[in-house]
Image (cartoon, rainbow, N blue to C red; front, side, top):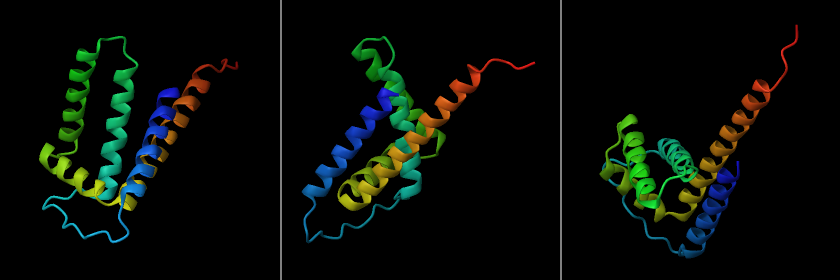
Length: 132
């Protein structure tokens, strides 16, 4: 889907900017008390980006889309038992570590590509004629 490709381009651009902004003498920032693991952050960001892509494809005004996106975002965090503060602190922590965030965003992109591939395969299967 074009939406996933656009998100992937955005993610790689963001990762490049993060890498370029990182200092060669990166100071060690202590992790927040409730740091979300890289694996969980990858899962969360993948679901959040999919929700964002879904909302962006809807024919609704910007204000409604923003409200809907915020609702989906909160539901995703709730589903995973993550509170907003822990998510925000973990996100900020990873943003201060360009290589960590680049890895996370690369894995998010890989996950989105896998989802897109599965969707295409399902679509092809559904469009196959039934053999008798």
